[in-house]
Length: 138
Image (cartoon, rainbow, N blue to C red; front, side, top):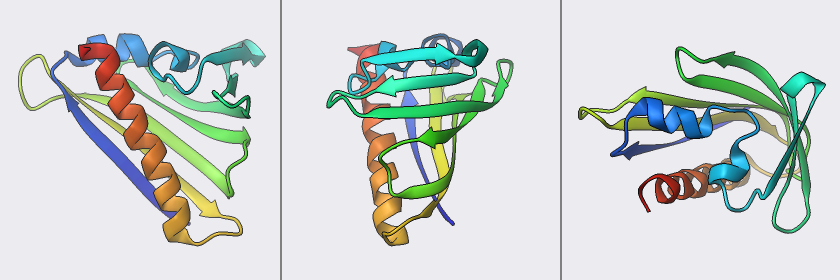
């Protein structure tokens, strides 16, 4: 099993960050390469479509509004991994009025090495957090 994580500090209060990213269907609001998210199963499953028309189906596994975190698994995706579980968490930052966002995941590479799989998701997380910063701070 492989693990990776990306973190970013933002000059925005944690509650404001969570307001933007805390909804399980909110990815299109801050992640430009995911233009659509359709909810099903009472909002516990999201079907994402990326810029290239690829489909990713994810299930909400845990949600804690007070702690500003949620975890999800992948049900269907074009990624060469199995057993994927990811967590997005928003914490108060070091400075007043700032936030620290962590996006992490665990997974088992399928047909590729640990380093390649880790690099794939580290890139997705880092690019996603950079897009989040752009959405919040311009």
